Amino acid sequence: MIISSLLLTLTAHRLVVPAPKPVVTFAFFGCNRVDASDVTPQNPSTANVPQLIQNLKDVASLKPNYLFVGGDLVMNYADDKGETLNRQAEAWYSLVKTVPMGGTDLIAIPGNHETNRKVGDAKLTNPYTVSVWQKFVKSHGLTPKGATKPFGGDQNPNELADEEGGGNYSFNRGPVHFVVLNTDSPISVSDPVTGLPKIGLVPLAWLINDMDEAEQNRAITSVFVLGHRNLVEPATVKGDAPVDPSVADQMAAALVGHGKVRAYVCAHVHALDICPLPGASRPLQTTFGNGGSKLEKNWKPAEGRTFGFGYFQVFADGTATVTPYVRPEPADYQSPDVAPATARPSIWLKPTEGKSFGKKL
Image (tube, rainbow, N blue to C red; front, side, top):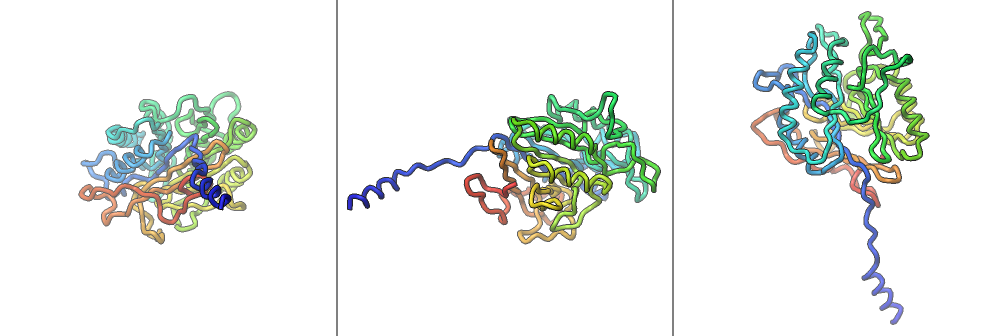
């Protein structure tokens, strides 16, 4: 009787160990621009305005350290000297600054729509967009302070034609190392078909060297690589052209070969997908291209087609989780007449025991 009473007392007063708190949190979504046929003078930003504003509000409610907007935030694709990009990007920022983000730093990553031009059916590099993009993100504080850039000096193993940090850079937040890529970097490698620089390239030599340094740095426990284009075809949907095959395989192998890399975070494909890179169960490619652009016709997830973003939590020991926050796709993907729903955690994920709600990375 005494032993039973003692056990009941201990059970009633057992210590509840709280789940560890993340040391760094961030959100990510890409692909928010409307289709070319839906561009109107009434919407100079060319963004899916209702979904953009709701994404910002939903992210702000979570209070992450960063929100990365992962490219294709405007339509652009204009064959000009960057005037269209500048006009649309400034209109986009005018919308963004209307939503209070608290202490969340906003970081904008360029996509193919920001960097490329379209001539007929051909998608080509645009040499003018680099300087326009750099000026845009610098003037509005859309890149982190103190970032390390790959361009400059006598050595240029990446063959970068012109890239001074507006698209490729890395930075630390506590024990977390972030590498941001312009997946359409202006590299002086010619396309044999067009005779012009190839699209869909990244500064691979710099990326590998940067990851090597992070791997050797004892203060860094996890690494996240972020860019617009996907590296591999998502598991649940077929999308547009990913990172060019001439560097994609090497890049994927490098990510797998660096043990601190937790995820490659991307967009480009207008869908939500989480899948491993070739040859390993980790790291994962997390695709959040469901920011507001018209969703892929062949994407048919069990829980329904959704817009939203990814929410990442990183812990002191280097472990991390990702939680997709989603809302139903409306009948008209960019209708201003129906207010988007508040995004909720995806129903197909289960809590990660001892950490937080989300999929372990």
